Amino acid sequence: ALTPQFDEFKAQVSAVQLAPPPYPKTEIWGYDGMMPGPELRIAQGARVQRKLLNALPQASSVHWHGIRIDNAMDGVAGLTQAAVEPGESFDYDFVVPDAGTYWYHAHARSFEQVARGLYGALIVEEAEAPEVDREEVLILDDWLLDPETAQINPDFTSAHSRSHAGRMGNFVATNGQYGLAIDVRQNERLRLRLINAANARIFVVDIAGMEGWTIALDGMPLAQPQRLGEPLILGPGQRADLIVDVTADSGETAHLVRLDNGEGMSQVALTVTGRASAVRRDDPPALPSNANMDVPGLDNAVPVRLNIEGGAMGRMQSAVLNGERKSFRDLVDENEYWALNGTVGMPDAPLAGLALGQTVKLEISNDTSFPHAMHLHGMHFREIGEDATLGPLRDTITMFRGETRTVVFVADNPGDWLFHCHMLSHAAAGMMTWMRVT
Ligand code: C2O
Ligand code: CU
Ligand code: CU
Image 1 (spheres, rainbow, N blue to C red):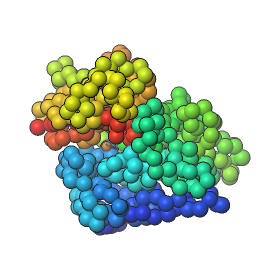
Image 2 (cartoon, rainbow, N blue to C red):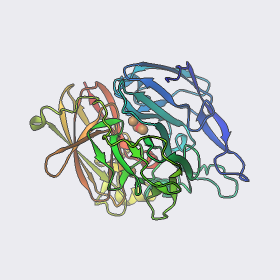
Image 3 (cartoon, rainbow, N blue to C red):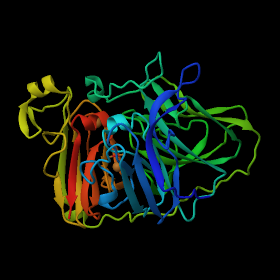
Image 4 (cartoon, rainbow, N blue to C red):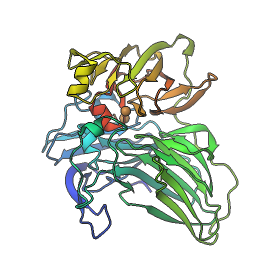
């Protein structure tokens, strides 16, 4: 069933029971007072009309992550729209061209606003979805809470959060719940829509003990469902749609998400509590395909290079900060920082000016000692693998230290499109750039 569209959508301060009692409620910022915000579920091709009412103490905006959207509706405060001041509103009005798992989140001071809870799922349903017994949307996040009071630690801009691996939380939750456990039945076929809404934490999804397929990444269906074998890495901003067949026996538990830091803590556990409730399906699931997967003109693609600099491994000598060139030493003394092609923060000029319809080959080098989750707004890219094969369509690429990776995309959406690290404190500390498509 499709939820009715609601007109108003209020970003406000509220309190939710995040940490279990006897901890008090945690003051969060949420949409309509909820955390995660209300799930928006609509049909492919439908129109979304949503009025953001800003009842927060600071300016905000809403970004519809992964949607191939009109630039004016992309929600980037300071680039595609003016920030919505407290007490003001903004009308978002757009059509969703592709089915898939997307999300929406604040895009003004996102390192603070997303960390305070301003996000929710945006599910665009396929006209013909694979048949499953049950569907769950699982939004993964980690919160930085004061261990005494369970309130959000407001120090979003600490040097440590802005540098290193980003702002790591100490309370990992799924849909706002610690250690989420889902009861399942033998033979049940589940569709799980995973969204990594964490500020910087990379989750590793593993399905040991049950069978499954990845059917979509970042909302975009895979050409062929991939059997789950190797653990799946989900960096900040990334999504995965999984089909899981409950093959375990009654009483057994499968842990779907463990942490990347070796703590071995389970975030989503599927426990088989009942006897077979459904007939085991043997057919692999299939999703109807979405956007055109073709990347024409690859041989004549415009090359764009992006170097990620900063951190201990960087060979950076100097960088431009607020229009002024600073030495490496001065930058270290004054900031924690990251630079993209020698510029810290949003440059005045775009990284590339692209002609509409042009094919772009973007080579990204991570010349730092930390991982980064590089996200492109408004368009999707495919990675060129070592053997020149093209990977799935995605909107975010998780890169580890020292890696160089190449993605290609067709610049088919006019406007100014942000490209930034989705480790949100990294973005705030310099890892932002943009491309102009005209
Ligand atoms: Cu999900 Cu620029 O963001
Ligand atoms: Cu985005
Ligand atoms: Cu980063």
